View 1 (tube, helix red, strand yellow):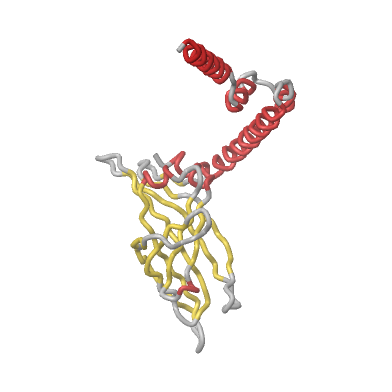
View 2 (cartoon, one colour; view 1 turned 135 degrees about the vertical axis):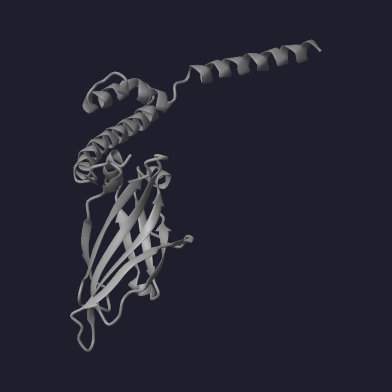
Length: 238
């Protein structure tokens, strides 16, 4: 019985020592935050990390410090670029309507030699009585083809550019044809997708990619609204 009591005391003693060691141990995240709080340069932060006694901790903390440094630089770039977008957002005289700057690109499909001219922007309006904001992503497509594209729905794409989510209803604003020959016309099509204010703000740190779906899959168009575009537009549209 005495031996059992001594054995239990020994086990409890080891457990207590182990607990104290764990409580006294500092995690890599804590070390990283401690160093960042010193307000040093990145090079000085790395030098501080090298003073740690554990080589593995040095490696992990150095990596986290480098990631934090890169994130800070990227945040500064995003801030500058988003300010450029914000400066180009049109605001109506009553402050209730907002139009983001147009983004333009040229895209040539495999089957067509004439490039599509793709223009898109986000616009919004505020309800004066409720203060609620509603937005639309507007796509203007100019193309020379034998027929119009006939956009029917839109789909939100994920970070891997997979656009297989639920279909979203779109608004077909206009479709015109000009300079027609026996084989083709110059088409101009405008469609819009309604977007909730909360949806845009939820995606402000990653941007959004929307696919406008045509009746023919190969004629579908992807529109990527960048993170900095959303940041800049939403700085004004509020």
